[in-house]
Length: 94
Image (cartoon, rainbow, N blue to C red; front, side):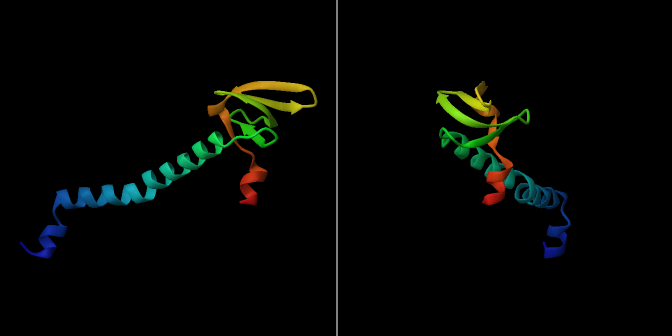
């Protein structure tokens, strides 16, 4: 079997497509999800955050999976930790 027939094989092409797909799509998404998880696990009171609904605020306190976010003076809303993301100002600073 020569190189050209091996490269033209349908199985080889499928494997090649999967490898390209992995490095272009799956791997970067896993890296991004790991960064988000690390951010959520490191949340501290006083951090600026944005929720999945687009509400900007400052973390007041954290109670397990519940994050209390102050969105205006005296207005504190409760969110699940999975709904919290880094604010755009914070991501631009990195």
